[in-house]
Image 1 (tube, one colour):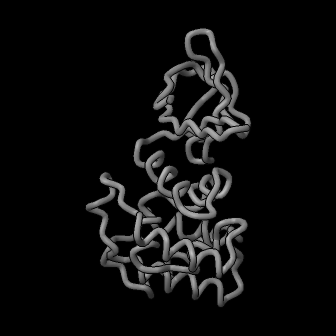
Image 2 (cartoon, helix red, strand yellow):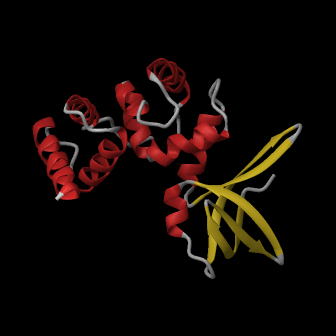
Image 3 (cartoon, rainbow, N blue to C red):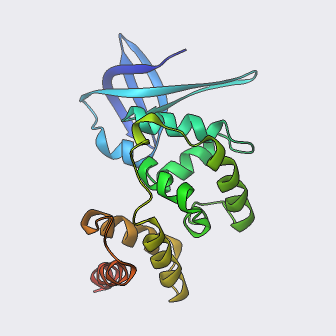
Length: 196
């Protein structure tokens, strides 16, 4: 089993081609990981080596926490590599910790291909298995406020992509003590700036 690879990035086009000791490895990555690796540079990727009878694939992550989150998602009934990668493309492991602890169905439905029923089932299953040591200290403070803001933005007619972008931008400014009204103001300001 491959746990990590360090080498030179030859390509970064949806998947990364990493040359290690003269061998090129094709590695599927999340958009966040892809944004952190540049062609021609040496990089270290934490690898999940996915194996089935008729299929093998490598999935790479810039942190152990993200790789562990991917593994937990894969161990969940009905979740394959494509869906696990889509979840992590939408929400960071830290955000997922808050989503699972608060039961935020709306946040999971922002993932491409996940409807309300699937999101509800995933939350039930993840609640029993979402244990990532690096995230053990991450509390659920602020998660209900984020859930309220997502619902409010959806009610105002904003699409999933716009909501995702707005929540990502306010995450940088918000603290666990930030109230729903203030988060909503920040999110709306962010959306207003994008449409200006």
